[in-house]
Length: 294
Image (cartoon, rainbow, N blue to C red; front, side, top):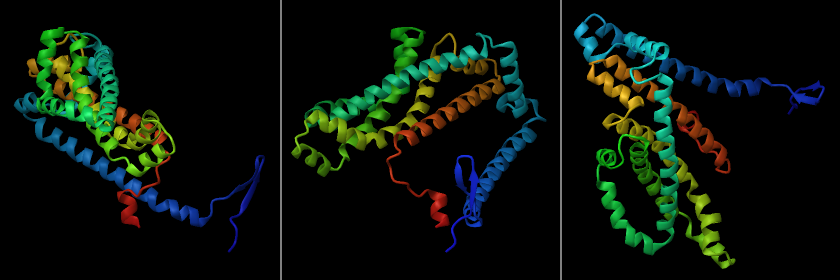
């Protein structure tokens, strides 16, 4: 078996890519190209068909909007501003409400989930109340919060907290309950206190569940902020959607939704990067493409 050829550099000998390593990377790269090409084709067919089917009928344009009109609306908002201020201010307002509520709801959900998962008495006492609150359509609470706290940021943040809390709570609770009891028993035998077991055994084991809940929870945070603004607010993407709906401007509704989608996608990428950084200790797992290639 011959060794891989070495190339001398200023930092010392460096391995040179062999035909075998290139061949190993080639299938993955080809698969990625096929995936991206298929995604691009789907987008072209979807938006191209939308444009062709709607553009010739003014009535359809009013009802459904058209991709070219959405782009024109975004350009108008970016250059001339909106009826309630600059586009940047609207995005910042919605993001501020979503991020504040997301942070508070996540912390409360983790603390409550771990506490009820570790202390059976607390689970038995508060379990029925949480089930009842979870059964209430939480979007409806937006009207209650607006009546109680007004049209400012407080009502939107509270709605976001309620939407985020339950998703994080149930994941943290279930993750705490799923911890291997042998680990807890071994740590207890070695003299670890209950708090230390929770901090050094339970939390790391439940962390995968908690991080997984963040992917969905941030989407709920955006929904809570948008719905709160739609129900009653002075600024934000929800106000833009409400104004566009009131003037039968379908392009404006789609334009605001497109901005939401871009924000949610960027947040998803950041959460995924955070997950990969914090959960490096996990063993590598096969994904769908790896299974098909195996």
